[in-house]
Amino acid sequence: MATAKNTICLWFDKDAEAAARFYAETFPDSSVSAVHRAPGDYPSGKAGDVLTVEFTVAGIPCLGLNGGSAFKQSEAFSFQIATDDQEETDRYWNAIVGNGGQESACGWCKDKWGVSWQITPRVLTEALVVGGDEAKRAFEAMMGMTKIDVAAIEAARRG
Image (cartoon, rainbow, N blue to C red; front, top):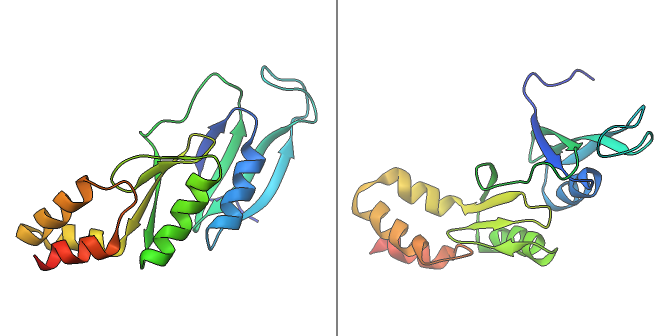
């Protein structure tokens, strides 16, 4: 299997494999394709420890690197997952937050490894693309939410 031309590399303290397996179980078109062990000792681990994990999240190739505690995740990077309805929005949100994650604002949450996620119903994105008053109403409704409420966004779009 050829390596993708562009791969997202996520730095983990030591749980890259657990995170990758959680993502593969949670999101469609996701999988863990390889686990590579360190051939020798390195600053944050020993020979034989899981060093990297190749995985896919919703069709996006990723590499998890167990690099130790030197760097932490931040909101400067997030996965944005487009959802079709409230059921799908709830399923992903609850999986992330309910597995040791935390809620944030405007459809953002973090998983227990600190990776940020935007669980974004398509109805919200579509409203923002339309522009004008419809976008403004949807945007204002979103600003008061943690998890996005699809019915409230639809109502805001209608005015």
